[in-house]
Picture 1 (cartoon, rainbow, N blue to C red):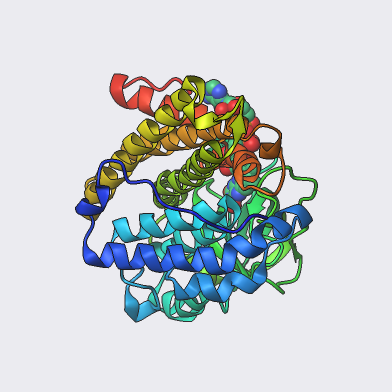
Picture 2 (cartoon, helix red, strand yellow):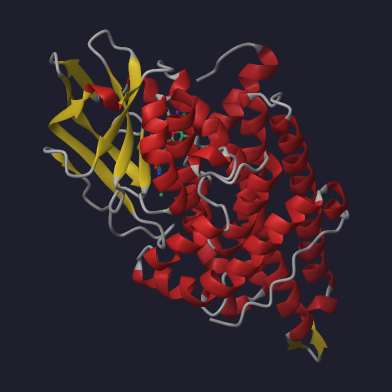
Length: 391
Ligand SMILES: Cc1cc2nc3c(=O)[nH]c(=O)nc-3n(C[C@H](O)[C@H](O)[C@H](O)COP(=O)(O)OP(=O)(O)OC[C@H]3O[C@@H](n4cnc5c(N)ncnc54)[C@H](O)[C@@H]3O)c2cc1C
């Protein structure tokens, strides 16, 4: 792969909207990605292996629980810092960002928000350092966009719960030490349980042959009469709103992350277009290529402003789930379109692993589907503005 020459575009001086702390956190993550992710990520993706060697580094830049209070091992940062970290990591690779998103928003967040003090103390500090890794099991073979229909269930057996069912498409599952599992009780109410690797009847087979997020490990969670101790149920929230609350936090991070992937594609294409000569002139001097590049930077700038404003509202506790859906949907589509256009600017070179663009493009095919598909987020906006659900 070519050396990482990334220069972040900031057409509207959005840096002026950031505090010194935001910039410090962002720059540390940016440097780390350049140093530790860029040199190894292409091979990891080609080999379809999650690069476990970067777990410690992710923890050091605050990617595991950026906004979890320091007393539980988190970085105690605000929502904009969290977003900027996700942006920088996804600039490297969406699969690496997926690992960080899951650990932070789908594992640490529910334990922090819905768990007991004992659960917080037991799991959060180890999750923050990466000593323990987690995954989040909501999707099932027959219930993807409609997770409320889930059939995974647990029964009260007096001194423990008995868990049965299966989850699929679970990021981090093959190596996770714990799984946050959403399952129905005997009354059909959804609860979150912390299931630990090693519990009898719990297995996590890996999903192979992905053309997307190849540097992220994906798998199933299978529960065959798993005895879960009663103290592993998170008591402070139940119903579908509990997992959806976690998804709000993760989707917000994706709205920022997608900008990172788009920035990398744009920056690569701009540099290539200035250097590549055809018909005796750099292709950047041709109107057709300028149209592509000009539209890219316009869309990136709009997405940056949207993410920043959403971050301000999240800091104030005012961002709605529907507002988060709009940003996730817009920014991921923006990124995937930019990846496709950037790929064309590189001509044949665009399909090789010498450059990051094709990898970003394939990764974004998962990002546009997971954490609520592109269609589902549109339906959420539609419902929000009309008051009429069209699911
Ligand atoms: C790489 C990867 C990692 C993932 N990681 C996780 C994870 O860690 N944890 C987890 O729980 N899940 C995870 N997922 C699952 C992901 O969230 C689901 O794939 C997603 O929610 C969509 O579900 P589905 O694939 O079953 O598609 P379906 O729900 O079957 O949707 C198929 C198509 O139908 C459309 N559709 C569905 N309902 C409607 C409707 N009402 N109106 C119009 N169109 C509709 C969808 O938009 C889509 O285009 C992951 C998925 C992938 C690919």
